[in-house]
Length: 493
Figure 1: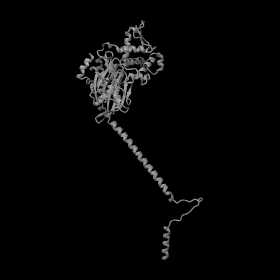
Figure 2 (figure 1 turned 90 degrees about the vertical axis):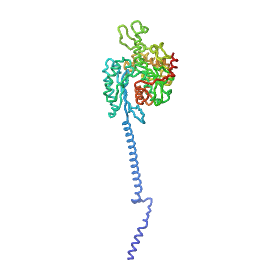
Figure 3 (figure 1 turned 90 degrees about the horizontal axis):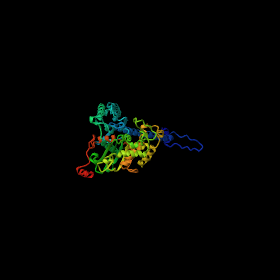
Figure 4 (figure 1 turned 180 degrees about the vertical axis):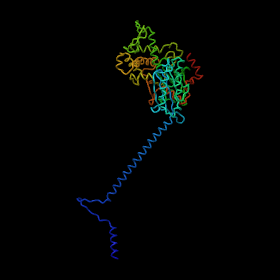
């Protein structure tokens, strides 16, 4: 029994002692036991697991962020309201579709691609004077375009308006009403909210105010100090609009008062009907026929605003036109047209005809055809009015055949405009309105701010949506109070 216990004790003690260490020489290989490799493997495994976990967490976070963005956009889209304005211009009819949000009771405008779309069809409403029913097809097409941009769920909650401008103003009131009656019929069945009075011919003064509104909205000055706003000179097809804040006392018929975000603006706004680019060129052509000074005595009338070599068709059996491109003579002819009737001016100052125009003050943007002509000639932003003279001289003095080769993609009727347009712009801005040739306070533009189109219809939408004190149908408070009225009468007498 004692031996047995002794053996057990020895075996137990031997088990408790450390295993003998084995020394190896550098030349001998030693196989490590499995326990010596277990620790490094475990560390690598843990690192891989942690990396996988971190990747999954990051992926989940990114997915959550993306989901939040998408959900936010969907919510914003779902909360959008829509409004449609159809601009019945002289050269075409354009539909504008606007999406906007209301935050804290105020509209938030975004004229980016997601929330704004437009489409223009030619000819304009006024071209249907002899066939009013014919206007229904183009208006219906514009309505369908708008319906494609407005979600069906909010179609019945979205309003649509048609506002016609100078082209329609040139028609007799009875013809205007016939065309409007057709447009109202189409809009009434469009599915949008529509009232009969929402299809109308707006005044030129309204058009100018709307253009001024969108320009200053784009520049961030709408709602700010009046004298720091930017004026607008808009050269359309049938009329010219001039609108700006003036510190002068303005006759009642040219004054508009606009309140926006608790700021009142005293505006001079006037539309010079018949002085748009297309109407003025037609008017000049008529005057050339009546002027014996432009006749060679052989029944030929020369037109200095058309490049040499262009062949006109015969206007009558007795006379015909001959192109005689000359910028200086074209400028003189357009200036004479702009100044016609100035001798009858009943005010202290008239710039165009017998119409009162206060002295231009502050910064201005020249839009529409001012912009298109400047871009055609590739003019720079600085000294563009001065450069317009040299560009016009080169263009007017060139042979028509060479111009056709230089601009092969242009239709004849479009290419022909630029000699007249260049001379007309200089005679209007510089010779009539008194803008210095190197005045950097006036620039040409088609867009402003964050690429917001300088289209008056956007201004109409802004005012209608923003619930300003300006009446959408064209009524507005006048600038002068009774104390200023007496002073004004004394000043012009």
